[in-house]
Each structure stands twice: as structure tokens, then as C-alpha cells.
Image 1: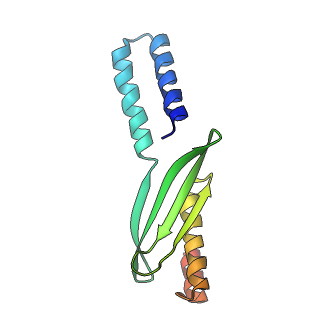
Image 2: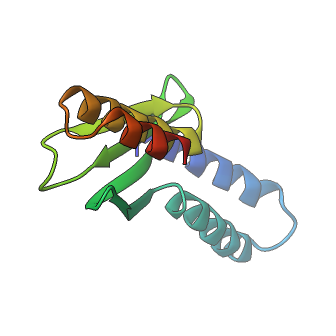
Image 3: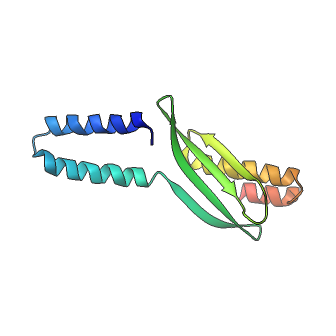
Length: 123
């Protein structure tokens, strides 16, 4: 995580502790737990079956110019020597675009047929 994001979260935490009426320790624990829970759910990875091959998809957040983007990656180790990647503003769109990138590359390298690609992308 970038220093700017961590610094911003720390400043927000201090400001909240100063202006909320409860003791700071109780607020700190509740706020820290909520922030860590929210942050941990931002990263996602999964394994799935793609046309009979075991493949992986992952989604990670990234910040660029104070904007949140999502990097997606789709790859099938042992079958295809390439991976599909994406960077979008949409969390679910990052995985979808990475999959589409992978399917396009697999189609160009003739690992799959057009019908298989159409079925996978529509389903």
C-alpha cells in the first residue's frame, strides 16, 4: 500500500479520536477492526475450470493519482504461457476484462475456437 494512503488513514483516525466523545482507545479498536476488515476484502483470488483447464483469476486494488483502480489477472499455468490483464475503475469489471483479454489471446494463438470463446464470454 502506498505511503499516501496509509498517511491519510492515520490522519483520519487521529481526527476521529479527537472529535468523538468516547474514550479514544475504544474508538481506535473499533475503527481499526472496521478498516482492516474492509481492506482485506479488497484483494480477491479464485480458481476455476476454463474449458477443462484449471485457471486462476485475481483482483487487486491500486491507487493512481488519488483514484482507485482494480488490476485483474487471468492465467492458466501449465496450459497457456500468457495471462490476461486489465486495469479498470470497476471491481467486478477488472476480472471480466482480464478474462476477455485472456480469451482474445488464446483465440489468436489458436488454443481455443471462436465458438468456445463466444460460449465462455457470453456465459
